[in-house]
Length: 221
Image 1 (cartoon, rainbow, N blue to C red):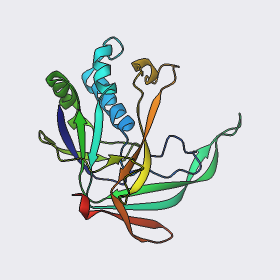
Image 2: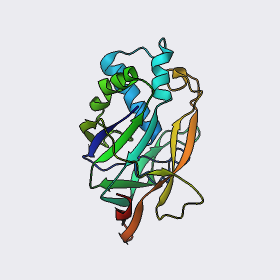
Image 3: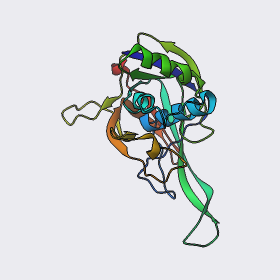
């Protein structure tokens, strides 16, 4: 069963690739499935008191959830250097310079969810509209509405035989064998990520030393 949740970006978005270093990190253009699922878990636990540890079937709903995207409008990527605190070996934290990207998104983002049962849909809709940021804290999104008949996704999994123009980025998702203990911040268990390459239908329409502007390819929507 499919439905979608539409969010309006209300601040600059930044979410670095999990393989990047802390000193030099480009941003993804969209919240990854991993980030979306972690945001849902956070709201369900903090607002609803959901006990995922003792209800593995509820966690499985989130883990196995399929996520797709439909985007439109402009994406402007601003690059800059910021000051961060970094620890080397056992020395105290010291200030250093790091490269970061922040993305300005002009239009709403439609996140499409696919799950198995009506009960799962009801559980998801209990907390999806309560999420107010994805990625870094402060990357705010405003929930707009649910759509029972979602649009067709235009962000696709990379296909080497498809020569359509676009931007390729690697996005993390929950591993199929992941348990709640492995995403629990109070556990020493290590998380498991499954990476997939996604093609965003964006083309470059201008750049300078401090920004690059992309527009969604009009042929895709």
